[in-house]
View 1 (cartoon, rainbow, N blue to C red):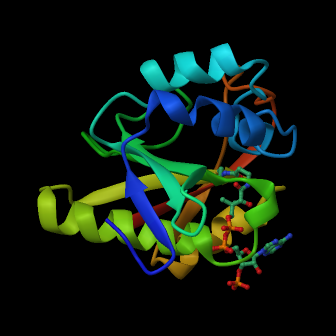
View 2: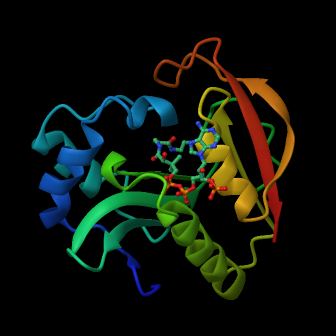
Length: 171
Ligand SMILES: CC(C)(COP(=O)(O)OP(=O)(O)OC[C@H]1O[C@@H](n2cnc3c(N)ncnc32)[C@H](O)[C@@H]1OP(=O)(O)O)[C@@H](O)C(=O)NCCC(=O)NCCS
């Protein structure tokens, strides 16, 4: 999946250094409910486990060949979102130096095109912490509609008592 600017492709073990560089930034993971990466080894382990499947992609910037973010969908987490039966949860992040250039919106549109063409999925759910409106803006630009708010449980990093705005996309 690609545009002139980005490529969505499987993660590679050779992305570990770039993943650590960007995912160790304390302004990235906590906004999405996960802790900053602490070492290249930890990033490599995430590539070998969490990212090792058909529904998670590295967002590669074609100009540099570097992985500058992640996008994917999968079974809903145990994080209190009001999901429908079988409804996948989608998520993403972009390295901070590349924020506000439209890259995440471009990546989400690519993934949604793929889901429409290649799967029978009827809807997707996602959510963002209320204090992270940029993420909600990305979803809205791609057609997600707000469905309410919830409070995430303590299983998410820094999740306790942080309200979440929930959005759904009917495909
Ligand atoms: C949220 C995130 C993925 C957005 O990526 P991005 O590539 O910068 O997104 P885009 O450039 O495609 O779109 C960002 C939109 O948010 C808007 N925005 C940015 N900061 C904002 C703010 N404080 N309040 C409201 N809107 C904001 C931008 O103006 C833009 O909207 P526009 O095109 O209408 O002007 C990125 O900031 C990120 O990775 N954050 C940390 C991890 C994270 O939050 N992941 C999502 C968890 S739910």
